Amino acid sequence: MPVIQRACRYAVLGLALITSTVLANSPVDFSTEQNKACLKLIEQKTTGYCRLHFTHTSNAQLAFAAKDEASRAFSRYLSARSEFPTSFQQQEFALQFFNYSLERYRVRDSLNFIRSDDGSSRLSMTILTSASGGYAFTLADTDTHARQIIGALQQPKARSATHYHRNITKLFAQ
Image (cartoon, rainbow, N blue to C red; front, side):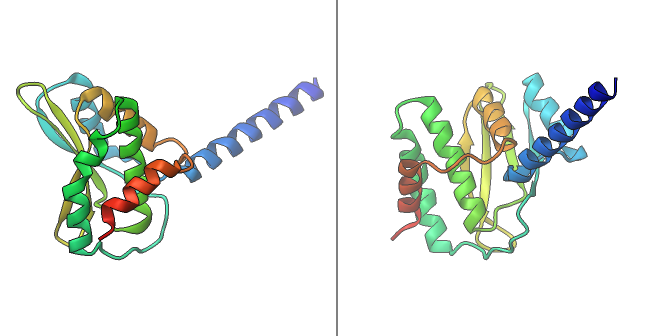
């Protein structure tokens, strides 16, 4: 019996260690109480607008993005995303873009979700250029993609893919 208890104890400790490691490597944490209504709106497919609040797992204080740099990225972003032929690649580009931005710029601590009367939806993030505003970038433009991106953002951060990273870097370049 002591052998079984010891094995269970090690299994529980191992699971706790793995869980804390996974959470530590996630770029953002959406586990705030105020997100329940927004998640419900997304799941029930009702018309409306909400913000999904998150906290950065990194404590780094980043500078605001330069307005001209963010403006260039904003004007090129949708065409760069649409150059990828599959929706999976477009989602991956959006995730890589979010993580790239989160590492370099101040990003508003919420994602905006909007569902119109016609059923279309959009999930966007904002790169801040000042304390009061910035540029909103569309991460997803369907319900399915929005749910997948929200889920993926809560997973450990994947290693950045070189071809996405190069394309994203070009967005911000002169």
